[in-house]
Length: 223
Image 1 (cartoon, helix red, strand yellow):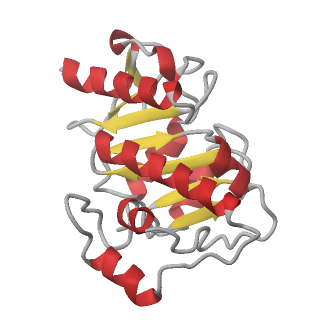
Image 2 (tube, rainbow, N blue to C red; image 1 turned 30 degrees about the vertical axis):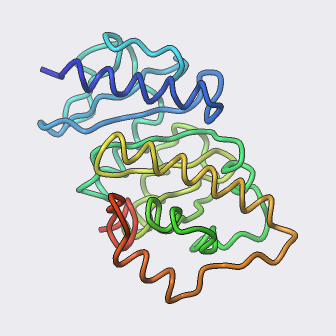
């Protein structure tokens, strides 16, 4: 039995992201792992701003739909992330404007998309990789994600959008918001020479994050 609290939490996060412009139309998807190895995920062609707690898609551990409407076509992406990052409990994938814009730039380092701009980027996200373009729903994205070895806190899919996984629905939501705001800062400062956090400052944040922010040292998708 999937709790009403979990269903409502997915819908609440979706509406919050939609209402504040992090996603638009029927784009984006959210999933949470279940104790039996399955997942509950947002359905296809439904806006994150109008999700119904009673109409979410439930998949078993083999990926078969056992309850609700057809799921997002990005199920292979979600499944690949969960297989790569065993401790991940939730995934948020958006088509957020600034992150997509960064993914389209010609001179981005695919191994380290963003420099250490802010403390909260390092604490909530960690590191971000860039993967090549795949058609939405393409199962080959699973191979590409697996090739990262689970060492990144977030991934940008070129010309598509960001994917963030973390231990809980709440922390995954916070991480993808931080990622989008970092992308916005990156674009604003692209022609400037901003002060970056030093290697020692960045290392201290990754190894001993302050306050209640407790990602692992490598980021949300790290092994």
